[in-house]
Picture (cartoon, rainbow, N blue to C red):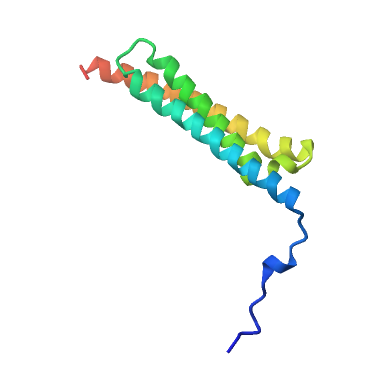
Length: 122
């Protein structure tokens, strides 16, 4: 017995094969880009140790690469990249300011906590 309440959505699509190829290329590009950025982060973290003098630059690099990944994910997977510039700015500018605020707060508090810990020999 075949159910009549199941709709076959694949038969109702109105996309051409060229659009499908373009969409698959974009998916592969996004996957490759995010994998490369993650690979760079992992390589930096495994090659440069925390006691190295260049570790603060590595942390800044981690923050920047993570922001690039987050922005690209928002633009591609949340379809914000297809919207008008005004809507992009209305959504992204408050988040950018909030992220900058959180980074500044994190860095200033870590300096304070590090100073307190060094005072007690940690």
